[in-house]
Image (cartoon, rainbow, N blue to C red; front, side, top):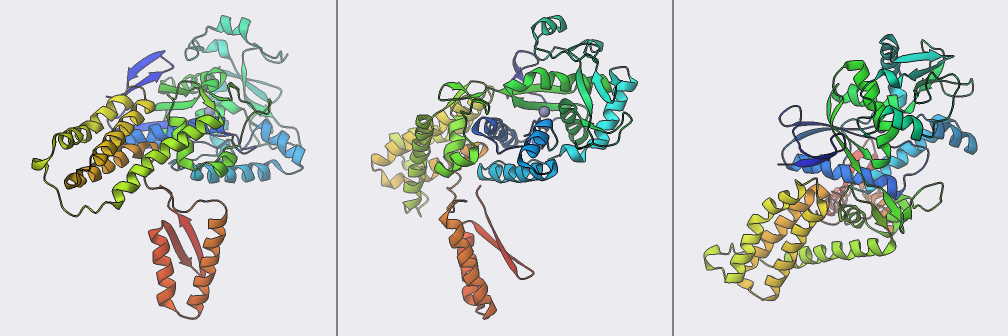
Length: 476
Ligand SMILES: [Zn+2]
């Protein structure tokens, strides 16, 4: 039975979705004003893993991850670069999807963009104003925090604590310094939409409430994000959503710990960060994923060259095992009746592996524990192989299959991508496709088809459409 640490309750809780086997899962996506760095990547990978693990356990997961393609950061950066905000957002949204793909993150079921949800946002803000939770001051609309009695329940702070502790800018027009913007008026040179309060744009927090509820419903099961989003972002999301519907917005709030850079807080302003895409130039995506999963998601994680090198050698060790098993010639079925003692022990470990693995993972998605079960299996299978009991080679096959089965939710050890998305391979592929097209023009179908089918075996799918050949790499 899966248990998750729920920030709302401050403890681990049995996970029971609203509907038997369906999970409505929302995770905060990026603001696309830059490439994402390895700190931003942690929730993308961790919650990709949690989503897959829920599926592994038989749940049907509906997963939404938004793209904030409208924000002051985007407007400022666009001005710096002398381009339109839409153009800048589009560029970094595309880069975001590319990088997610390189990291082996499964595509979300819904990928709402703020600019496509402005009508719904205006509707939501209007409803809040009507109910007395929102008020307008000269084209801006604020949320009246004191009106929502549950405010502070996620971050565990009372309004009075917040008021004395918070570094709140004094904006004269607000009734209370804690009130936050639902809608902001736009200057003529800023992006804006017509609204009942004049031309303006949504505040940041309201976007997530609206996109989560529009795609998944009024009450969702899991809302995830980085620990730094608990306050004020997620606190505000609860206030806006529950003030409108009168229903619980989200049942389980899950937050990942932050990534440190060589032991220090990582931030763009300090300049100590690395873009995920740069890290992927040096390390393959399984190494990067392993690095994130090797520490429990709620703990701080230290990004360092050494930790990545350690991850790389761990991943290599498993692939070495997979490779040696694949090289074995195990046609014979092997009788389990004739197993040696060590064979029986190994079989026992294989057969109990899934239970032990789920036991670890069910305890607040304890991926280091889950990986421990996988590595234990590899270690024992290697030892068994070294004993040279060749008559029991089918056991090694079994061990390998189990390793792959249990690694699937983490997106690990499914067979290394034979084509790296970077560098020379890409150019070579293009060249190969050009040659193939020349063959097709000469109507040498046999050779052209051979190129296509051999590429397919390597995990490269070639599609011909209207005279153009494109390729995609199956990296899963
Ligand atoms: Zn959000």
